[in-house]
Every structure is written in structure tokens, then in C-alpha cells.
Length: 376
Image 1 (cartoon, rainbow, N blue to C red):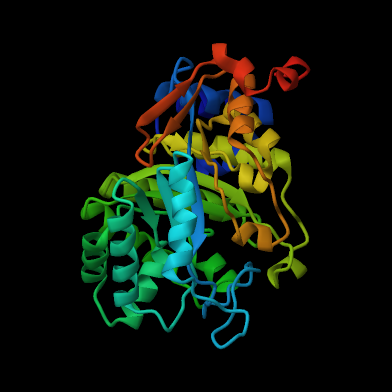
Image 2 (image 1 turned 90 degrees about the vertical axis):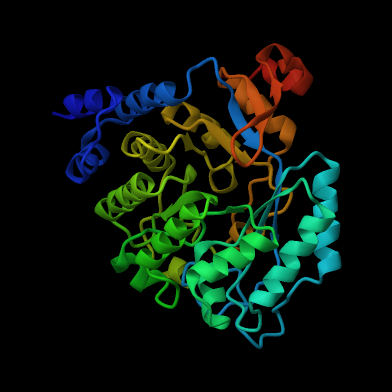
């Protein structure tokens, strides 16, 4: 039965909830990886490159009243550890990004009750004026919902005002696992799963493209994860707009939830998660590996399990590192990893347009000494 289901996915037929659960639980790692790689070839043949984007993650504020149990980054309102970055500081960070050829600014922060729509409009419009060619990949659905509440606006009006100010793409943060059961346990003050999906659907209908994510491995079950994938797939059917899906595992260090979660995820579970994502999400073209949480080696291995993108160079990362996980990867190392996996590498923009190709024949440019003894 498992082989029949894998062949069904390879043939391009849609898998049901029950079939997804069965494959995750029963298929061998190699079999599910092989099937996911075959599906990846349907979207991205072997002669197409593995892509990456040059970006920077700027957290404009760490003040947050959501108090998520999985987060070690936030400061509560009134804390002396809280901050709102001055615009000049943000501008300096973005200038450094642009000077190295960066094209995407990932702008995210906490639910700061002191910041209304006017703050975000000014921030986005100033960035757009100073960096007109930069993609503002900004404000997760939970932040956008927070702005609607602090500013007493409708969702549509909030989105339209942010778009007019310069918002060009929305990151998929804050999804965690999109079931109400999980949300009520790990982030009861954050938006429910249904609202996260509502924000993304409204954005898609207004022409804004977004990414989608999953943070698994806390209190979620396999059934929760498959329900999450189907919710994304259904939304993509209704209002296409997701450019990519990025799964990563819960990082417990320094978090209240980390003191309670006993069964931490493994490398093999991550590869299985990437593979089942590729098999279930038959209408989302790109699956991104997460070197930020998994390290470059495992991120590279994910290319054999359905992933076709290495994510961003991320000159700056604060949220995951606050939980005790830090995986620094240089651009040259990213390109080496892609070459060693047997693919050309390519810089892309936020919408997956290729900007610069690094063929494998140029591999020596990215560290001949390291390549010589590496295992493919």
C-alpha cells in the first residue's frame, strides 16, 4: 500500500489526509525521499539550479504582548530590554545589505502595542524611497492582524495601506502548526490558525505573494502536521499566492516550552518532514531547506528529499539564535553545498526569478581545497 501511495504522488495525483499520515508513519526514509525527489524533478528538473536569495533579517522591535511559550526573543511591554530600532539604525543595516548585492529585506518584529499603522506606513515608505529596488518581504500575518487591532482597521484596509506604503511580499512566520489545538497550547494570545489563513488569503487576493512555513516538533502530532499542509494546499487552490514552503523544527533553548517538551526532533525526522511536504503540496512550487535551524550539511541533504531552495544568506538572525541555535553559513559555503549536491547554484529574487548563475564548472572558485575531500 505504501509503494502504491508513493507512486500515486510521483504520478502527480493528490494525496489525502489519511494517505499523508500513513506515508509519514510507514514509508522508509529512503523510499519517501526518493519519491519526493522525483516529485521535485517535476517542478524543478535536474538541469535547473538550486536557488538562494541574498537577504537580511531586521527585527525592528522585540517588544511583544503575545508571550508565545516557544519564543526566547521577545521582551514584554515595559521591559528595560525592549527596543524599537531608530530608522537610521535600520537604514544602516539595509545599506550593508544592498552593498553586497542583497535584494530582499525580511522585516519582522513583535506585537508592540505602542506601534500603530502610521509607524509601519512611515517605516515602509522611507525604506522604499531610500532603497527603491529592494523587496520589502515584511510583517507576518500575526503582525498584520496586530496592526488591524491596534489601529481599529479592517484587514483589507490594513493591507491596502501597507501595500501603498511599499509592502511587496509577506513572510509566512507565525504559522507554527496550523491547528487550533496546537495554537491554544503554545501561543494562546496569538492569532488562531483560521486567522493566519484569512490574512494570507486576503493578501493573495490583493496581488501580494507570500511564503508559508511550519515550526514542528513541540506539542504537535503527525496528524496536526498533515492538517497544516492540507490547509495550505486548500488555500493555494482558492487563492494562489504561496511561492514557497519552509518547515523547521522547534528550537527549545531558553524558552518556557522547551522545559516541558521531552521528545526533540531528529535529523531524520527533518528530512522526512521535507519529503512529505513535497509530496503533499502539489500546488506550491518551491520547498526551502532550513540551514538556519538545521545547519548547512543537513540543509544540503534536504536537496535529495524534495527541497530545491537554500533560503536566504541572512546577514543577521536574532530569533532562532535567542533560543540557543546558531548556524552561520557564508555565501561561498552555500554555493559549495549546492555544487557538492550535484546542482548548479543560482541567486534569485523573492519571486524566484534567477539573477545570477553559478555553474558547477565554476566550483573551484568557491573553495577548491574544501571540495577536494568532501563527500557528495
